[in-house]
Image 1 (cartoon, helix red, strand yellow):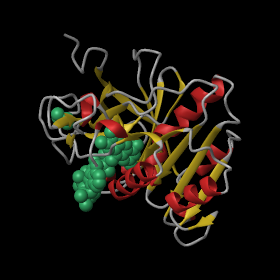
Image 2 (image 1 turned 180 degrees about the horizontal axis):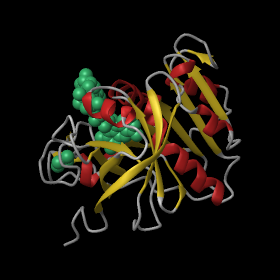
Image 3 (image 1 turned 90 degrees about the vertical axis):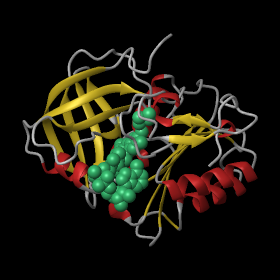
Image 4 (image 1 turned 90 degrees about the horizontal axis):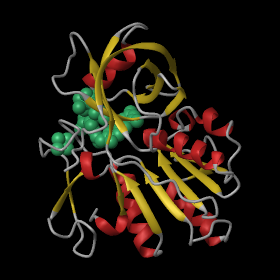
Length: 274
Ligand SMILES: Cc1cc2nc3c(=O)[nH]c(=O)nc-3n(C[C@H](O)[C@H](O)[C@H](O)COP(=O)(O)OP(=O)(O)OC[C@H]3O[C@@H](n4cnc5c(N)ncnc54)[C@H](O)[C@@H]3O)c2cc1C
Ligand code: FES
């Protein structure tokens, strides 16, 4: 039987670059060798300092970008001790990295319309998703909805601007783009028929946003896939700290909970209850 760790590796790897990309958020480049070429957007790494880590347990982060085969980029929002240690570490600091982990998004075929819905650092899986769609020749029918509290919370949005996809920004205070949350912005575009409700919708963000998105998607009968940001311990299916309730009609119906780290973090909305 295949295990969640079959293609993953634990490596010690240096931070080689770091740049601030908004309020309390940084993009960090880590030089990591020997990881398989193919990565799916939404796959993640467990990261911690290799020495003097303030947390015993490493923290999960989506792979944000891979500008070179041996350079992995992570978008990190400072929340508590684990993330503070990563964003405050000087260049050259060695990290303990376990990757790649989890089941990422299946990138939709070029002829399908895709709508990406992100809140804050929930944009992290979608830079690679967008790049992979562009490689398929599907930039015109790949839409990005990116919301944050303020313009400063549309972290690293220039990287999305550079892709020249149809992109819709929203901020709670109206400082950039639509004034309101990202779901209200999406609803407005759906109502104007500028976005097809037959698209494949993919979403990632904080728990509140994902719950609201799940309710919205069910109400509108959308085909949706979500990347969950649950708390995690091990990251590879042994500690049982990341359960998500399953739906009785879905593919995990033989057990009341799925394991987010190894069976997700990307789930079809039809398979889970959130
Ligand atoms: C698969 C996956 C991918 C992720 N990708 C990214 C990413 O690309 N970039 C990024 O910045 N973060 C990402 N996260 C979230 C990140 O792992 C947490 O923010 C981090 O673990 C917090 O650690 P900490 O020690 O800094 O904070 P802690 O000290 O553990 O917590 C500080 C505060 O943050 C809250 N918190 C901690 N973890 C979470 C969480 N998962 N959800 C909601 N609130 C939380 C706590 O309740 C507390 O209030 C991801 C999470 C998962 C599961
Ligand atoms: S984090 Fe340990 S089982 Fe998921």
